[in-house]
Length: 116
Image 1 (cartoon, rainbow, N blue to C red):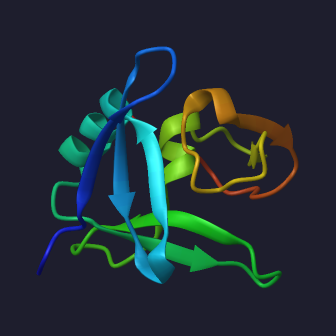
Image 2: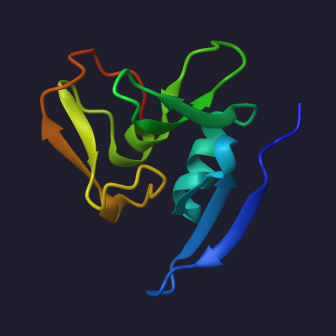
């Protein structure tokens, strides 16, 4: 199975970025260090998009051994119990930690994934 196309860039503050091409002509952007940790945890995972019942789109990775969606924002921001991850700029393709914040509510599931 083909891997997603990867783009390299640098943000205005000089931090290395990775862009991951996704369906619907979208590209998710995250720090290279976060991408490398996620890729080490799920080297065969398929990156893609999924949406909720309200039509909001989220970046996910799906490891072949589980076929379950893992939300990349939670891997970057940390998977705290009973919180929801919000995007400060409203752009769910911007997965830099400076754009992610935890808010009360949501989920309610036990902790599942972390970057370690």
